[in-house]
Image (cartoon, rainbow, N blue to C red; front, side, top):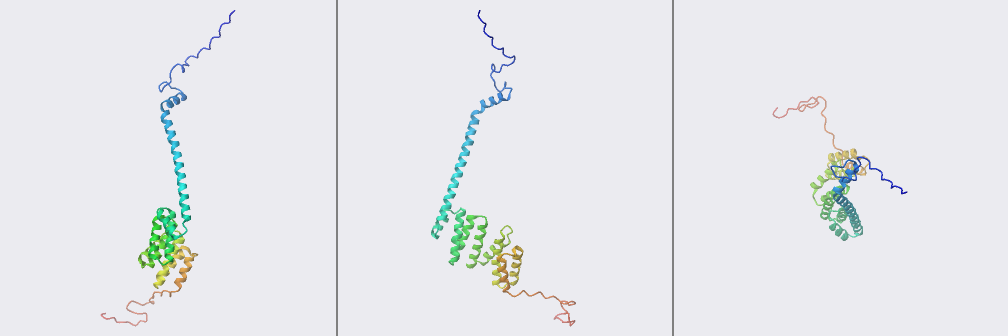
Length: 250
């Protein structure tokens, strides 16, 4: 006797997901909606992912090239051991920080050699290259001192006062600028101005070597005379002795 074939299990009523094509209007579950979204936008999504990956790779490559360039510039600066090589380096890297440092070194050498106009040019070029930071203040002080040697006292004094009064500057920078101003006041035998600058230094940093040096300079001048104080009972026209002085016309 032949055994009848086992009939297939009946399909549950209402389960027709395999019979009806799923689209944006028939999708019900999250999986179906996600499948429809992927089908419609997979090209754009794939392109976006590729673009992001390429951007990441490009940035990494750019950063790598930047690091290699910085390393190359640093090596070139380290290899510049003569004034001629420093000049060549500074000319080749006018906007780089190390180019500014090279300018300061060249300006220092010019100042020591008595080439003050050349030193002014070098310091000013360093200021333009560095733009900001403590080295800029260093170059500004150098430029002011070199200008003093070339007879530009007004410009030099103005630059030093700006540094000494700038609350955003480092204390050491302000103190050095105030010291040089004190030196100028002492040379002019202006005891009042020298004392005012010493007082400024005392408030700024009493322990600074610049303050101590400024105090020594100020001590080389005589003390400022105290203002005359009229005696009690004295008036403009009548001294305290009680002797009346008749002024002409009165």
